[in-house]
Length: 167
Image 1 (tube, rainbow, N blue to C red):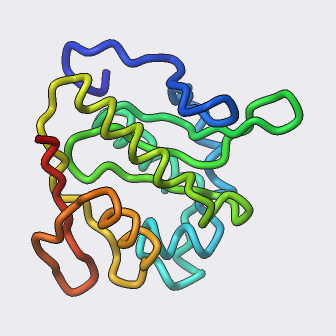
Image 2 (tube, helix red, strand yellow):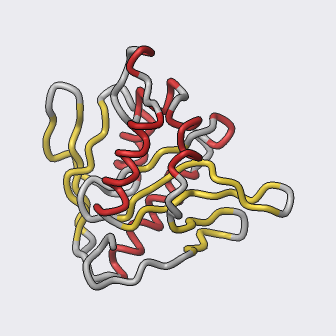
């Protein structure tokens, strides 16, 4: 149960060809995405291929995210069926988004997904997103956050930290 006293929707439609589908426990399906160097570098901050996420890592990550917020697969319609292309967790602190496959990156899907996260949090009466950590080398994610009105509020050696007030 991700957010206390909240029923997580099974599906959130972003538009006709893109949706979020509630995580179903199938952590194995995330493995290929998290073994892509672009994903594990920009999402997990891992640069050593020997440390690439394995099934145990992905399982632990999924268990954490499922309890931290509303955990979803990002799905795109391909040839009449929806296929998982990434994942997102709706939560008011540091909501993570990962787009697993190159053909879906840098075409606005992350922005549409973050707008959906914001809308869902507003629907649940949250007033802000805080502590959204973006690695300093992940320029596309920084641009997305800033385009959506997030403000850079802090940084550490590896990350910029963003907040977004909804009001």
